[in-house]
Figure 1 (cartoon, rainbow, N blue to C red):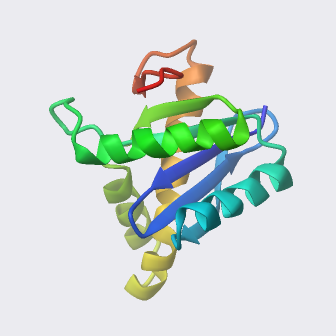
Figure 2: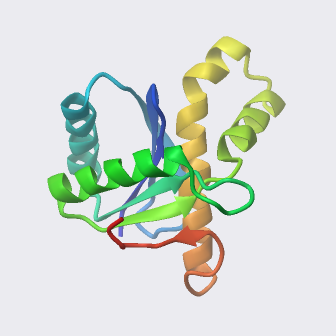
Figure 3: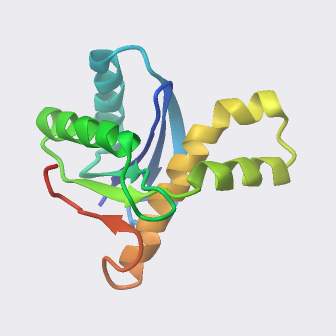
Length: 151
């Protein structure tokens, strides 16, 4: 099953996809946000191009586990994704994924100007890989958040 991973932000959406076996995530794009329709059109193109059957989106719970304003924004976006694409959408705890992405790029010696362009898709890969690893480990243990519940 091909799965699309999203790191949803106010300015950009990082995008990753997994391989056909559902084992590894690879960052594929960064969508620079324009407006709701253009953002969904860009995602639609990726869904068609990669044969996506499921979406995993980073869910920004706070370190204490509580939900804030960003979670509300993600929940609204999840509702739009479900309406537009009729695909299952899984919310996945993205705690510190951007920090981890920044660290990985810095360790690889990527300059700041290049890191900025790649960080969102790397964060999407980290989110998706965490989900894939959890599924390989036998289920929803770990960092899932209300898989298909409408909020």
